[in-house]
Amino acid sequence: MSMSPPVGIDSLGVAFPSQYLELADLADARGVAPSKFVDGLGTRRMAVPGEDEDTVTLAARAAREALALAGSNGEDVGLLAVGTETAVDHSKPVASFVQGLLQLPRAMRVFETKHACYGGTAALQLALDWIRSGSARGKKALVICSDIARYGLRTAGEPTQGAGAVALLLSEAPRLVALDAGMSGIFSQDVNDFWRPLYSKDAQVDGHFSVKCYLEALEGAYRGYQGLAAPTAHARFSDRFAAIAYHVPYGKMAVKAHRHLRTLDWDPAPDASFERLVAPSLHFPAEIGNVYTGSLYLALTSLLASGGEGLEGQQVGLFSYGSGSCAEFFSGTVLGGATARVRSLRIPERLAARRRLTVPEYEAVMVSREEMDARPAGDGKGAPFHYLGVAAHRRTYAPAES
Ligand code: HMG
Image 1 (cartoon, helix red, strand yellow):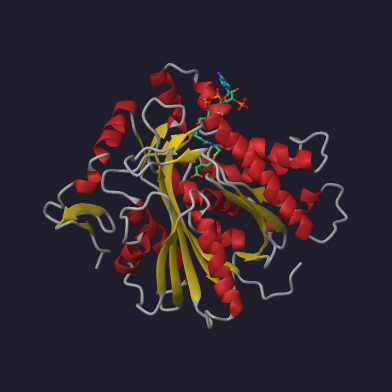
Image 2 (cartoon, helix red, strand yellow):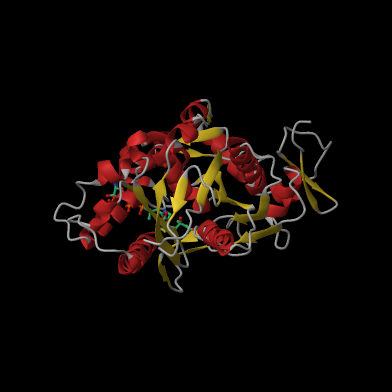
C-alpha cells in the first residue's frame, strides 16, 4: 500500500429526475414477462428525465449538493471536470455551464472528459493526481459524472436506461473515502460493444457482446490490481475488501461481474459472497437505472448509505468500465463518519417522492426530448437550474433561486 497522504472523496452529491418508470409496467407494455426485467436484469425502476432536464441541469444539482455537504461555497475549488458521454454541445463543455450556474470562481481549470462510462473515472484519477502532486496547492477538485442513458424504444437496451449525476468533491483531507494512490489495475482495447453515432440521441449496442467485453476488461483490470497489491492473509484475494462496487448498467451485470471476479479468486462458490460484498451497493442503481459515468459512484453512494458504521475503516474495491473500452480496478478506505454524512443526503426519501409515469407518458417524453436541443427558449422562465431552450443558438438555463 502506498504511503502518500490520503487524498480522496471529501463530499458527494447526487441528482436524479423526479419521475420514473416501473420496469414491470414496461415489461407488460412490451409483452415480456415482468420477471425478465426485474429478476433477469435486476432493475426495478428507471429514472426518466423531464423535458427541461439535461446533463447540465443534473450536473449542476449534484454539484450544488456536494458543495453544500462539504460546507463549501466553491471558493476552494481549483478544478472542475465533468465526465459525460451525453454532452450538450460539440465545443462548450458541460462544466462551463455548471461553473456559470453555480457562480464558481474564475481561477479554475474547467473541462469535460469522454470515454463512455469510464469518462468520470478518467477525470477523477487525473484530479487525484493533480492534488497528490502538490500542483493543486491546497485547492479541491470537483468531478461530476452526469449522463442520460438512452436507447431506442422497443430495443433490447430499452429496460437498461436511466439518468442522473454524481458529483465528487476531492481533497487532501477527505471525509468520505481515501483513495489508494498508485493502486489501479487498468485494461483497455479498441472494441465496438456500445457507441453512439454523431447523428443519434440513442445509443447503439451489441448487447451480449458488451457483457463479454465488460467481463474481459474486469479480468484484465483485476489481474493488474492484484499485481500491484501486497500479499494478503485472506484465503481469497477479494476478501481483503469489505465491499466491492462495480459499474452497474443493470443489477444483473454486477452479479455476473462478481461471479467472474470470485472465479478468478478460485472461489468454488463464487456467488456465496454476493450479499455480503455487493448487494448494499445495488439499492440506488436498482431505482435509477444506468447513469453511465456516474454508475460506479452511484453504487458507491448506495454502499455508503446502507453499509453501516462497520464499513468505516475498511477497504473497498471499485470497478469502473466504459465501453469502447477502458476499465480500471482501484480501491479506497471508508473514513469515520462517512456513512452518516451520506445518509444525511436522504436519498431513499427523495427516491420515494418521485412521480411514477405510465408507459404512454414515458414514450411521449422520449419523443419530445428528441427535439429539445432546438426548442426555442420561450419566455425565459423556468424552475431554478432547469433547461429553458435555445435563444440565438445559445442553450439557456434558469438561474438558481436568488
Ligand atoms: P436481452 O437479450 O433482451 O435479454 O438483453 P436476455 O435474453 O439476455 O435476458 C436477460 C436475462 O434475463 C438473462 O439472464 C435471462 O436468463 C433472464 P442471464 O442469463 O444473463 O443471467 N430472463 C429471465 N429471468 C427471469 N424471468 C424471465 C426471464 N427471461 C429471461 N421470464 C441485454 C439483455 C443486457 C443484452 C440488453 O438489455 C442490452 O443490450 N442492454 C444494454 C447494454 C448493456 O447494458 N451492457 C452491459 C455491459 S457494457 C456496459 O456496461 C457499458 C455501458 O454502461 C455503456 C458505457 O460504457 O457507456 C452499457
